[in-house]
Length: 267
Image 1 (cartoon, helix red, strand yellow):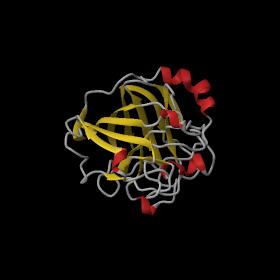
Image 2 (tube, rainbow, N blue to C red):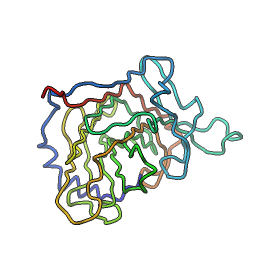
Image 3 (cartoon, rainbow, N blue to C red):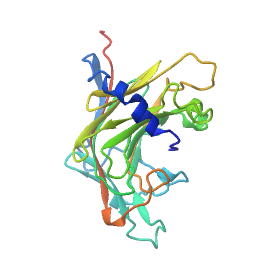
Image 4 (spheres, one colour):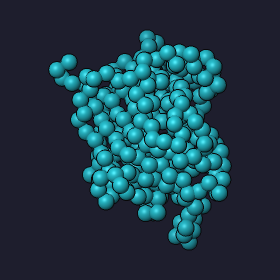
């Protein structure tokens, strides 16, 4: 994920606005799907391991079982030193899963309860990409970053990407992202609500950031009213997060559950 956004501007210019956003979700949501990771492994009808490919975030992805564990109702994704560089030359390997080709989310509210270990060079992420990805060249289909954390930070980044923000370089009208405080040593609930005219972000039921559709003649400002698939992954190293401190490894991302809500039809 390309990070060209000026976070200093977000924190200084929009921190006051974010602090005043409304605190929690209302009761008119109906739970329509969830995964509590109660089995001996993750559900392969819903999830697949993310393969390695060229972007920075994916260059250490591995299907090695050492990067994956399902235990006590938690999916654990790991970033580790590669134990066998004869079989795989990558210095580090990481685990990640996605619902690509298997499960889509269009509108509604998506929640993920997760605990993120800190490590220098760790870059865990929870995000959304277009379900019919082959129709779009990034970022024309939009990308919704529900949560990204860097290193040992006590905040997470919540961002959207589009032609408008990336190719036209319009990142502050409206702001394309914000930051939110987390409990760094505990589980937090990261959520996004997707509407035809806005994308709204939450941490622990506190509304932290919203990206609206606006009236503009510029291309691709709001491509987000479409089905998306979910990615949950541990990432290591990169231009944004910086180098890995190997003394901090292994590092884990533990996912307790994923829940998807839609508006109650009675409302």
